[in-house]
Length: 114
Length: 112
Image 1: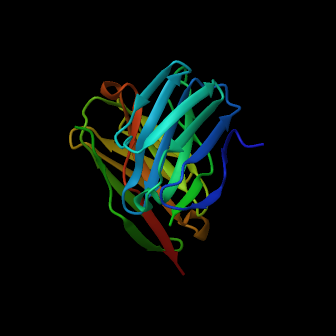
Image 2 (image 1 turned 120 degrees about the vertical axis):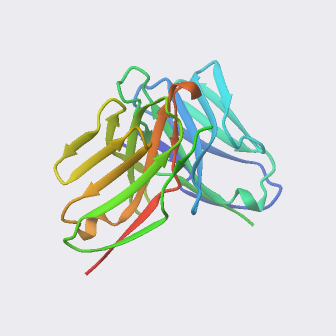
Image 3 (image 1 turned 90 degrees about the vertical axis):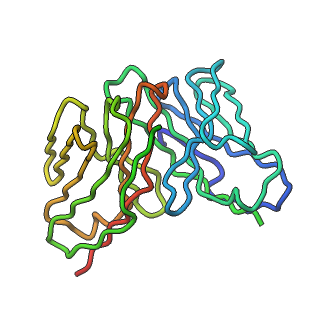
């Protein structure tokens, strides 16, 4: 099994619908992140969480919300999806205790809003 | 502010060396990273360098860091078709609560 699992892998939804993307990890890491990837723009941070009670906005949090249900689970919601939220979404985890803070990424969720 | 910049595309001939360049703005960077993203996959950590080093070598990969110019490069020797991917430069910055800031990614294509 993958260390960081994202579901679904692909999703097409209509404008105005609520959608949830889920992420679970088996790394035992405290820190979890949601990024979106757009061509030519790299990865932009949406939200991050350093533990279950610590949730922080990233650079592009408008239109998104998150829930850290447990150390291993971090979900991202689009309350009312719009077409410019069409993107590839990545969940990542990191361990502050490791010297390099390197991230472990999930395989991504490709979301299309029509 | 924090910014990481890299060119979007690079094309090299199979067997040649590839050099991917990156510049960053935050002088308080602690670690600098290179991630590789293959088609349909997430990002994988390729290598990293601590900010007090100027070079790191790992098999075909050489990372060079020029702190004065805030310039990072990744050299891939003897480039193979399996090296085709998007390569992301990234930095971790204490001033941003230890988040990692990513560049836009360089798509490396290999021609025969």
